[in-house]
Image 1 (cartoon, helix red, strand yellow):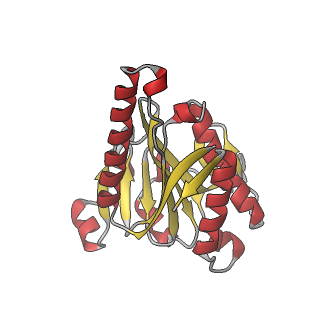
Image 2 (spheres, one colour):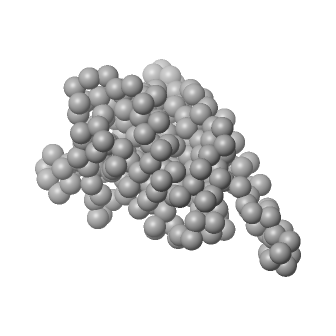
Length: 233
C-alpha cells in the first residue's frame, strides 16, 4: 500500500498552489533520477502528495487551449477581480472558484503501476462513485475527459473537469468538482473549448447547498480505495 501526504490548503491563490505543486514534482523527479543511478537495493521510494484546495476566482488555460475561449479582456478580468493563468496542464480553459473542490495529486505513477490514461480514468472513477453516493448519476464522455451528466444527450453537462501534467510519470494538476460553485462565471468562457454542452454543480443538481467538508471526506476515502493508498495528515 502506498502512503501519501495529505494537505487541505483551504482557500489559496492559484499561483501559490501551482508553485507548490511544481516544487513537489521537482523533488520527486530529482529523486527518481538519483535512483536511476543506484542499484535497486539502494533506491528510495518516491513520495506522493494529495492536495485539496479551493481557489479565489480564476480562469486557467491549458497548454493546448485557445485564448479565444476566454470571452473577457484583461481590463474586464481586472474589473471583476478574476485572475488568469496560462498553465502547463492538458486541456483548454476552465474556471476555479470558492465552492469548487480542486484535487491535485502529485504522484509517481510507477509506484501505482499505471500509465497516464489509466490514471485519468481512475480520477474520473473517484468522482463518479462519490457523486453516485449523493444520488447524482454521472458517466464518462468518450470524446472528452471529465465527469458528465446525461452524456450523449442535448442536455449533457459537465460537473467535474480534469487536466493533468506528467513529467517522467510524475503527475500534477488534477480535477475540479463543482460543489456549490457560482456557475455564472462560465458565461465568460467556452468551458474546455466546448460550446454545445453545459456545466453544472452538485448544488444545482440536488437543489440544496452541499456540505463541502462531507464531499472532501468522500473523495478522500474513494481516492485511497481506488489507488490502494493510505495518507499521513
